[in-house]
Length: 370
Image 1 (spheres, one colour):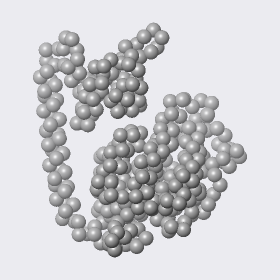
Image 2 (tube, rainbow, N blue to C red; image 1 turned 120 degrees about the vertical axis):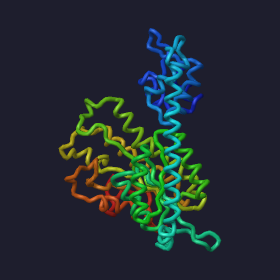
Image 3 (tube, rainbow, N blue to C red; image 1 turned 135 degrees about the vertical axis):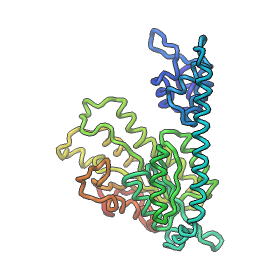
Image 4 (tube, one colour; image 1 turned 90 degrees about the vertical axis):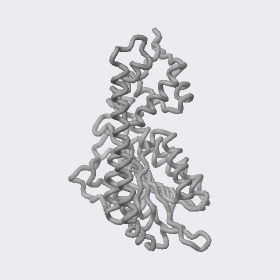
């Protein structure tokens, strides 16, 4: 079968399947014409790979398991080694469970401290049957930089904030830092590349809260800094668009149905002035450098306009913001703006009143040209 059919049957993205093949976890039959053919047994193999990764196994450990399960002549020590790896992973999981139990006890002991923010700002709460209901916000890539600061400021304004992070450990550290400040923040481990991750996250939000009010599409990458458009590799362009455009599209499409339930929503797309046509036409000395990143932001701006038009009249506002050059890993330590200053406009747009703008582009709370 073709890789696209394997993706459809397993629910695993093409990107992930190609990664498994690159790491030799999958070995399709290769024909003289370059066509790669997958077998029916690869469906079960992919499911096993997914399960093993979820248990925290490394590529090398998974290969060891597959040697036992699939090789015609596995080595004599194969099974004992595999059993030993399994026991070690179970011990690690049990330790993680114990740590989570301790963390739960700690959170319960401090829950009263967090409840103090429930009274902050009527504009950040809604009323159902005369009772205030806390509004819920998602900040993608909220484990560091501008994303974490946006999450901090939204939580300080009284919202229940959920940050997403692909890296569970980094996400947990960010949440612990914000919780220590008495802010209501939770972590969902999710990758905007994966449509299944996005779907599961929205199902969980609907189950836990029954609503979603704010979406800040902050997750982004720059993989071609300073590289000419004439030299940038196609794979780099695709990888950039996957996060900076398609990830935003997936999150937006999944979030809007939840927002429509309560006739309220604020979507803020973190863009960049480097994607503005004004900058592209005049050059400003940049010429065609960093083209993948800049094109992805131009597409994001277009998406902002189109979504805004399609949700007009529903109570949902959609805007883009250029935070400027900020002192983050991406902006550099010599950037002119602090992280708090870079986050300000996004938070302003995420909490604006019903008569606020939609389908616009902002920097420092001022409209700017697309």
